[in-house]
Length: 332
Length: 115
Image (cartoon, rainbow over the protein chains, first blue to last red):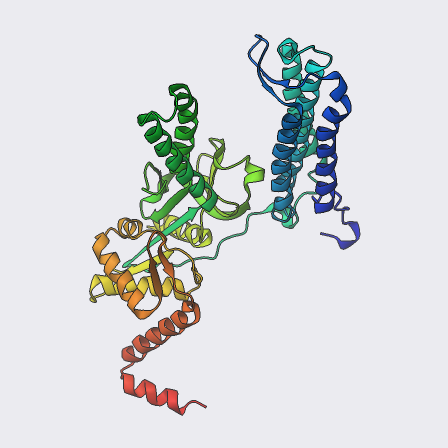
């Protein structure tokens, strides 16, 4: 890149911007109910059934505190991610999108909730028009897309070409394999917690300490977290002469196998959850990422044109081995 | 972890696997404290018995290269990096020497003669 024409790096997420922005949103979320408290019922309606009127209420102070606490959790997460996403364009776009989208969502939900409760004699009288909920969702998506587009900044340097992994030479009479793993301690912890919670809940339900409705309400959520966590908290990958096999979860099952014949070449990339849209299996077939943790990813380019990225440790050696196996197969 | 086995190697298989793991750690693909892939995965990839891999890993633990911890699996021992590299290079040097007809003692002499 010509040093004389460097583009201003305005779009780099800075901690100060994020901190100020988050503080502003927090103040708005707390300030709205505070200013309007004279015209609001207490408790206020906070949840509406589908066109059936309000079905849940909360004291005004608790509702405002919950909103601010949830927003703070999102905001602090984004703040922590700043250094991880500054370097790459897609990551920056994802970060700005997440910040703008979640702000719009929180502010929109807060505003429509207050509007619905405004001047209602009691929370049961609060009416939330369906179009407002839809409008908030649409506005959040639009804000996210717009921010991602406007603030993604300049394209990455060095032409955006994927780094070529070091060449590996295989000698005849040698068997080379590669095995790697990736894990996410947070996801593992969440899985364990969900499993323990589910066991405790069922035990207490069996002993008659928990009512049937409570057990029925809480167990599906816990079960979903447990099952999802079992398959996405860790993975193992191996490269052999047959190709690449990815085993999910602590038991390495299910296994996804990609035969070597389908692979064009392999390389590594740095990707983070914020740019691929979260953890787990992300993206569409053809450009998907199996994301367990941010950082080094092994990327497989298919002969058919698509590609698949897998977050896994020691990915560079895996890419080298795949390319070496492909080379020997072609020359053989 | 990239493991290479020589199909013409006459040594017992578990020794070959231990050497391959040692080489992988020596080359720096795993730093101190990093978790190794499960033995079952290594065995499946190499197409050998899990017990053979476990035996190799146990040998490496006895060497002080690996640590076995309950619930955390097998990881590279704290001060392993530099030593593993040296041990691996020395092994290769020894094999090289033997190929050229030098014995272990000759190699020690050479080492002592070096400034």
